[in-house]
Image (cartoon, rainbow, N blue to C red; front, side, top):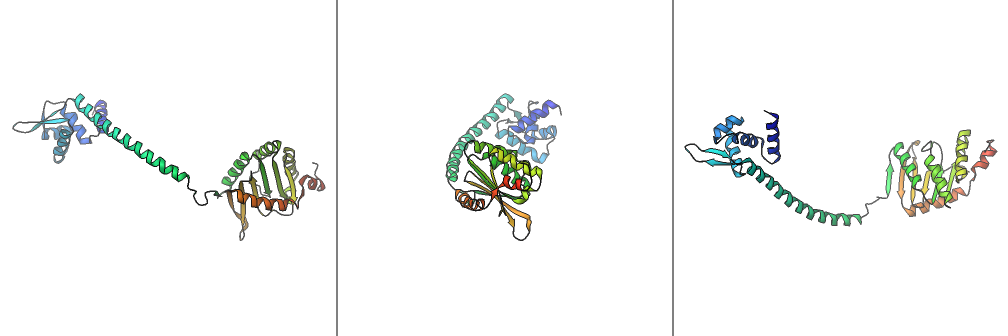
Length: 277
């Protein structure tokens, strides 16, 4: 089979003909007339199938029967036949386009109604792995505009927290509030203390407290990201939750203020420990 004929058969199939119909029509156009048996032989179509194939070509206007001692068939001019097939597709597509337009309007109404519905707990996101937790923590800091209140203890969610440093500087320069309660273990190395100094210079107010109840980041008075340590497994595992809910953020702010009031300025405690800051 030549590549040109193979392409013609592909186009005919794309226009809706079966593989057998395409082959039979391709053979028929090369003859004046042909019987069903001759078409079966020429197109290599099983004899038991050829009558259905020919009937399909006749019904679609690609062939017509020719009377004689034995009924034979003649091909319709390909330019007329293919134009008819294309017209059928255009008609079906036009009908589909109209139906699709109606369906889209109906669905748009349903979609609009659905936007008014609040999925239960849609404002709660559980972060299952450290990578997801770190990514959401960095994103939350980058979106902070008016405030960040934090409970921090080791191990840190992220080691290199440049977005947090940038957010601290941005918030405090615009008159916002950035404060953090640290556990004393944060002063375990000069490198760690220098990091604290960087955040202090960016505008963060830090205090050392005896113990933070959990890791917590409150942003803009609306978002709360926190880690709840498993009460049985302890520090081996934790559930990390991000909640967008002003009422919860307000309640956690009260807890923050209570612990904050018990702390001492972090750099003062660092100096007492012998660090040069």
